[in-house]
Image 1: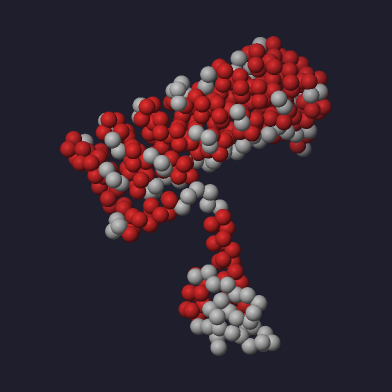
Image 2: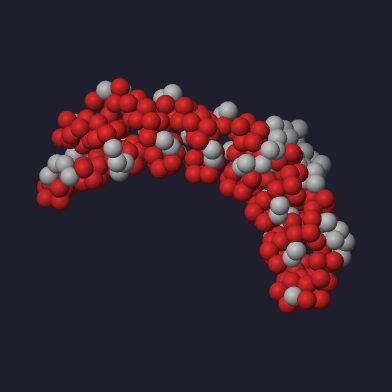
Length: 361
């Protein structure tokens, strides 16, 4: 007996499986030896694809499922029209006076729900901007214990960033405490890297922040090459202490060629050439030159290596001149790629624009 179409769809949505025992996912037997119809085969393929997609989604959830549960609770508690409530809160916060005070009072007990909601997170960011920090400080305990969840949330991470930016350091201390011991994981997260960048920009000198940032810097060699981690290292170079910059440069000097040729490492080098001391910059350049003329030419001809090279050549002083002289010796080998020719143009080497036209003709 064939399974009716609605029942088949329901079986697929409930994740029932079909095995090799001759029964469909709904438990309806098929005749042994009978060739399944093409429509049946298509339904089976759709079911398998749906199960596979569901399993991939489940396995990719690194964070606790609390974000989904919060959003479901909004509907369960009769708050389906979140957009209207958020619009009302925004209007009252912007109005000021008693309307703003009333809006802040209505935030109490809803901090988590709003923080993890697409529109609600904007309400909280606005409240942080227009409300006296003392009033907001009374609401922040509602977010305690949820920082790691917020790091994984495309919405709540913005609330955490705004707390770091606008609240006194003491009020943001719970954020540091909850991600301590997870610095590398947070730095390598798509949203988490933003949290560490804001801490570096606004709380770097705070007593509680220093151990967390040191924890991240202990993995500087990994973070420099990471797609998200390198943003944290660039923030350290721009806003950190001299000692923190030295730690980054120590990692870069451990393998200059590898970092310079990396798609993320080259941008860290670019920042290092702007913010590190002249002595540290020269140590790095010497490391590049020790690799030999062949590797230096290969680096200058590559997409990412050329970015690192050009950032060094813009420096004043003898270190950049030293690299200039070594590249001059291999200038003919740079003409083979557009990246090498850009390095030559910056140096005033080679055949310039006419040479480019000849090569591309």
